[in-house]
Image (cartoon, rainbow, N blue to C red; front, side):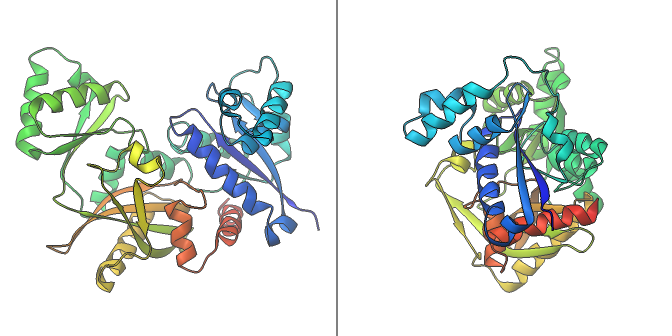
Length: 370
């Protein structure tokens, strides 16, 4: 029986490029283990930060090194890294058209696009894969696009009655406007949301460009900064002393929810540095919450998954105000981090689905959906 050829698409043109490489390493390892090794043949395809697609030896070299090509030489401190860097430099073609796929793409039976952030989990690559008419892991164009855009996401949540924090949608044109419009905008935000509040670009993942503000001057500066990242912004009211809980979803038309986990940290909020610096955040699985709260979060996760027409995989994040019992949905992530220590696979491991089996199930769900 011939093996199914899995195209592992990783890297990408976003600020989460390095995270994607680490996720791809974990998936590649899972595909070469046990039952998966007998069922699947791996075809890694690496998208450089400039948009060029590389397959074969260059992609394998990046997986082996665990860092983008330009970092291999400066960070190579072991023999394996040095060898990976040498292989990469020897095999990268001098010029490749941006977004031009490689010859190996034609042989792929199913894609696993482990791309995080813009140009990866926002519907753009999903549209390209759909045009290829080859099955792929994860949500389609609609679910991916809405899952990335925080404003569209919140509108979909509101439509199905999911409780969430108060927020205000803002455009770059309002922020970078004349001296009469901007002060009025800030007045309205202060009146609606008060301080503290969070200012976020609507379409960037992993806490990029997010600021917690406590004064008018901080709000003005945060709006200006966020507008440099995105033309759509969102300002959210802060939740007093929330616990941050997460739930993983797996499936297509009849998805299942995992046990609930909790993230704790010492920083002011769960920013990029806290999220990706080892030792700055702790995961608690399962979360120590009442059974009724856990069940409510699982039910709300499935509601959110359906509201955005997601498929395959998602992680849904919540705020739990312990003093009042209030549960507020924060956001959904349609392609969460997938390293062995990431919350999504750990939630499923605690729910009885080990990492290798989870990768297998996601591929089978892709085949079923497409």
